Length: 175
Image (tube, rainbow, N blue to C red):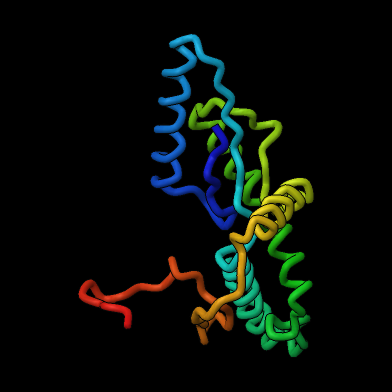
């Protein structure tokens, strides 16, 4: 079972526990029936949720630093707005790796069986290369094409949004 990964963007909650424990029940059931089962855990280490969490931590640190600097009459270091996209991604990568490790320890404490020593993280170069191979194959077969489609944009996050992130009223009809 290749797990549909959680984001590596914070502490686990009851939804994570329910998801993993139910999958573990199914895996153990099949093991007891004599089947070979390998559960490969994974983490989604890219995207807006992780970057927003990192920016939230930076905001909190800036507030604390401003208070301390004001007391001592000092300047504070690099601000969130001064971060380049590459610097933000590097911070997000470090945060994702650290968070995935903490979540892995929690899942092990829950008693979930799995290949915990060889998980996949979407930031691993091998994983990214495999995704590019799949994309290339889809492109070559004509499944990827240019067309007209709106790109939804979030002014607050200053980024494009996936359609799944949009919320519509129940009686909404697209025209």
